[in-house]
Length: 547
Image 1 (spheres, rainbow, N blue to C red):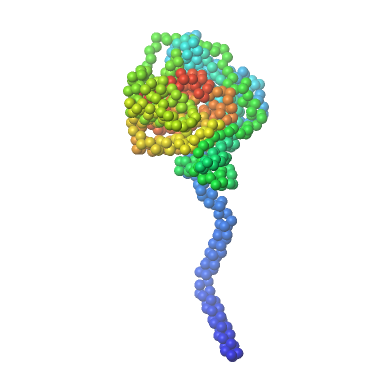
Image 2 (tube, rainbow, N blue to C red; image 1 turned 90 degrees about the vertical axis):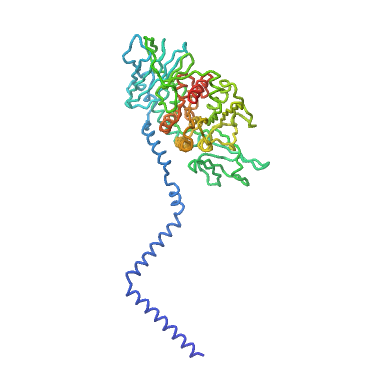
């Protein structure tokens, strides 16, 4: 027994010796290949080890690889940043002073003629009377004749050295008042731009989730700023997202309503806030003479083409006289009731936007008296509104645009009117018209949000024109609003940047524009919801485009 064990041990030792010798033989024959294999294995080991520790970060970077939209958003923001460089200031006295600045009419005359251009050279100075060496002041130029119910905006050219050229096209006869308002100095403009893009904290969203008889509220928002489980509502293929904190025992699909509330949050310093006191906003810069006399001078009006799609909109886009809006780019037709009814026959009209477009729904039945409201059983003013003329097969529908929609009122998200998606749902044809507006509710948020929405809408319009090039699309730009509203959140500077950006993004599309920004300056409304008289003039322009 013991001899067998000894034999087995000797045999095992011999086998181990043979294997060892075989390995050394392989090494001597293929040493270079083997070391390469060993080195490769070691490299892979370290790479795998590092992947285990940093995998989430790497995946995050991969998921954030910039899309074409990302790159375009960055390019637009970069362009705006170049136009609004940082303007730090030591004190209020070093900013632009309306009183110390000078406004001089070039080639001043005793009498002007209709059609003449009047130019004003404005030199900006600070409160010590020192000339400013850079531009960027937010100015608003307007001429008016209150007795004639006449008004028009002026064109402001910034030479970026503290001087500006204000140009007016004289369009009516009589005594004309000239005005150049300093809305914000360049230092205030710079502060507003920085503050706007600093964060989303000025407005918070609250979502209501309903599951049977159970109802729960949860915080929502436009950014992912919580480590808790979130509901994500994707728009435009995931390029735009709305988030809500997921309630316990509630599915994400049970979100039914949303409302908002303003937070006591400001990204302005105390020194910057002083620039936006009521007494510092909209200060008159024109001194004597504030009036000029304009005569007919036997000039005849040049012939203009009728308003049609693709007509370039000049600056200013028109003027008001005796309360009537007169466009600069085309000849309007004054349609009577019979012509309006005939024009609207068989038309499907979709109004997508905010309350400034909802005003159209209230005024259209006064213009086309055969249109009647149809009750869709919703509640509140934010519900979908519908006008019908069953005999003429005419439909007019208004839907609010999607998030952000700033209101303390609960609004339904069930029939959410995300504009790109609404456009994609429409087949379109020669009797279909889409009118959209957005911007007022975007002002309290970083500019990137507005740019992304505009690009998403632009892409949706391009898709629409591929399947139905005859569909009419009309942009209504933002209205100006109350001058002394919450400037950091809702001030017109934010609207003006959006107005220029909108023009840039949609310039190559075959769409029509109702320049409500210029129109409301001309009328001098200074109200986010202009009076019905102004709304009717917007509707008149709309009818000229589609009839």
